[in-house]
Image (cartoon, rainbow, N blue to C red; front, top):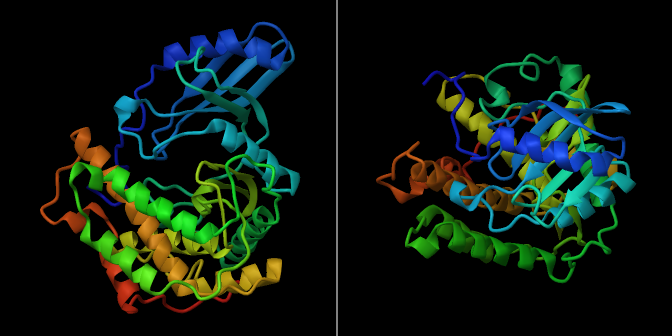
Length: 368
């Protein structure tokens, strides 16, 4: 496989024609301008969780650029245990109130009667999104950016994180600030059990990471804030390197700010490590932990604490998700059961180095 190749992933098994028909029947009541014609409907093979539907709709009021999300079918070996679109709507509305460029939610079909599953509909926002597949570090607009463009993207992205953390989460059902980090950690244990262990699969590197984190629990945990949960540049759209769209809110939670900051930094390093496996330079100094911490302090006044712990926790959390994704690929005949169970986690070597304190973060780029 060439390093520029896309990896085929089974994300959904929905029929586009059936979706189009359902949308044309449902949208007149939502948009309120008579009959609707749906065109240019695409189900991108991107992301690992909900099925995303991108389409155009035209009615008497004119054209509309829309996006819908549906939960994956049970037959598609879902990555997460549940998909609460009402919760996602509430989170999006909360962050929009403080200025986060999240899309405006237009409707929620929660009964499942129209599409066979709940559907969340929102406006489509413009912006270039750094690619996950193949990773943006393999080529493209961000890799080709100059220093000032990278600085603009870093600062703008961290500003979005600080704005998310300023949102009022108290009215969102299902969220609680009581012992938030411990609750989040135990939920990750439960996710690990659901994702692999309940079928008798054991991943030593993940179990070692749980123990490593438990033994080094932060002595002081910051105040609980609304966290994006999946805070990364791949969930932002950019116009001239400034964030103009923020999406994918299904992992939102309450916790210390460092939950998002650790995830934000580690997800870039995850792709950087993959680039280096393919002997590509990538962007080793970009989104450096020190630059991100400085930019966040400048944006929020908050001093990042216990960053090593939260970076390790991000690597564990991502390992949980990646082993579930690998099991999904095995399920669909796109991969094979590894001889070494640690190989369910593609970044197991990085996770081991993080625990050993030998991971090389390189030199900050000084973009903050």
